[in-house]
Image 1 (tube, helix red, strand yellow):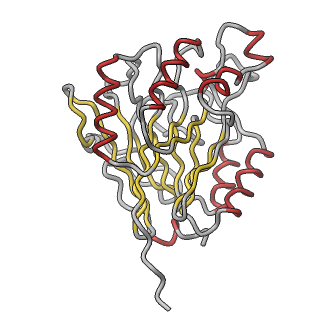
Image 2 (cartoon, helix red, strand yellow):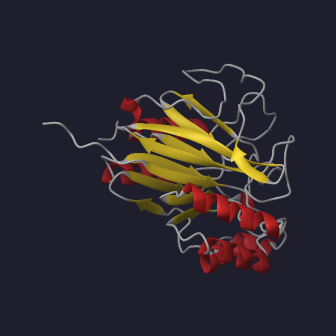
Amino acid sequence: MTQPAKAVRRIAVLADLHFGTVNPDAIEALLADLEAAEPHAVAIAGDLTLRAARGEYEAAAGFLARLRKPVLSVPGNHDIPAYNLLHRFADPFGPWRRYISPETEPVWHDDQVALLGLNTVRRMALHLDWSAGRVSRPQLDRLAARARDLAGRTLIVVAHHPPRHPPELDRAYPLARGDLAIETFLDAGIAAVVTGHLHRHDAYHDRGMLFVQAGTALSSRLVGGQPNGWTMVTVAGGSVRAQARALIDGTWQDAPRPDQPRPPARGDRVRSAYPVPAMPPGRASAAE
């Protein structure tokens, strides 16, 4: 018997909003662009605030309330107190739970797609860069169990820190246990991984998964001359593809293809490009 065709699903991916460094005019422009794009859900990959201050969290919560779509948010390293060490160590996610979500690893799904939140933020690290992320084996085991429970859907992981940095990016401390996370994603049938943290647009295929790096949606803390941006992930016909949107000369538009190719890396990783070619159908349906 012929299987019924799967409906298209569009997931808007935002990251690094950094309320505290946001132009109010940019908020209205972003909300209008999202409304026109008509996503089925919004995934926010961390750093809603700059210093985890109460006013920043209140502004972020007000923004989320205006999205009028299902929203899944995970915390970023800026979403826990930076200077109040008592709060950072005793209750780092207290403000997050008060203003954004009772969960730091939420799940959203319908009958076609599932978004699996993964909290990569840590109170401290064994080096001076406490902004770097980490995942634990119990977290990955829990994610794998959730993936099994949601089999038959296209599975997308939402996290703040990318599991692996691009080879051309000189950052000393990538996600701790990032390689283990990637192996877990592969075993669990994950179709795509969407992240933030780096304030740059990027997307590539690696070992059958689509990795999406969303730029900073609203913050003035731009990196490498890249504009503000967000990314639409579209699931259609058993494939997953990405298209970045960029704020260029005050107007939201599809982001252009990068001028320079990405250095090659292991596996079947391909150069960054927007739009990113659709993933082979077999990967997105691997969990079925």
